Amino acid sequence: MTGAYIPGDSVLHRLPAGAKLAGLLACCTVVVLLSSPWALAGAAAVVAALYAVSGVGAAAAWAQVRPVRWFALALFAMQFLLATPAQAVATTLRVVVAVALAGLVTVTTRTSAVMACLERVLSPLRLAGVDPVRLSLLLSLAVRSVPVVSGLATRVREAQRARGVEWSVRAFGVPLVVGALRHADTLGEALAARGFDDE
Image 1 (cartoon, one colour):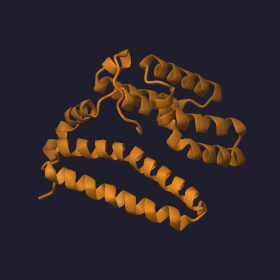
Image 2 (tube, rainbow, N blue to C red):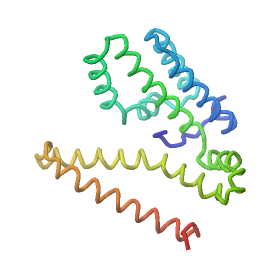
Image 3 (tube, helix red, strand yellow):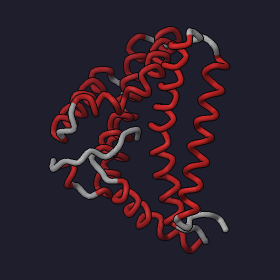
Image 4 (tube, rainbow, N blue to C red):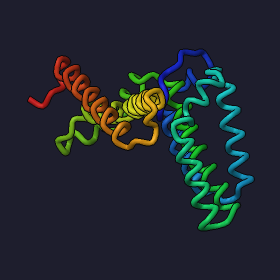
C-alpha cells in the first residue's frame, strides 16, 4: 500500500475499512490462484474500473503502481528467459494487480479507520501480552514508510543526474541511507512525544 488517502464520496470511500481489507485479502487470493494471462488481464481491467468508480483520478492510480514498475520489468524479463512468455505475462500481471488493489484500499481509506480496524482484529492478542494499539500503529507506519522511502530514492536519483554521477552506487546509497535514518529519527521523536516510546 503505497499511497495516501484521497478524500471522496464514492461507494468505495463509504465502505467500512474492515470490509475493504477483507475484500483485499479475498481478491489477492484469487489473483494468486489465477494462472491464465487472459484471466489476469480481466482482473486488471476490473481493478481499473474500480479506480474509475473511486474517482481518485488517473495520476493517483498510476502513483500506486509506479514504485514497482522497474521490479515488474525485471520480473518479466527473468520469467521470459527462464519460463514461457505466457508465464512471464501472468506473473507480472499478478504482482501489478495485487499492488494496485492494495493501493486502491489505501487511497480510499483513512489511516485512522485502518488502525481502528486493525486494533479490533488484533484485540485477542491482549491475552498474550501484546498491545494491539502499538501493533496496529507499527503496521500503519510500515505501510506509510514505503512511499516516503520511494520518494527519497527518487529525489536522490534526480540529484545524481544533476551532478552527473548517475551510475555511482555510493552517490545513491549514502544519501538514501542517511535520509532514511533521519526520517526514522524524526518519526521516533514524534512517537516519543506522543507517549509511544518504550520507557
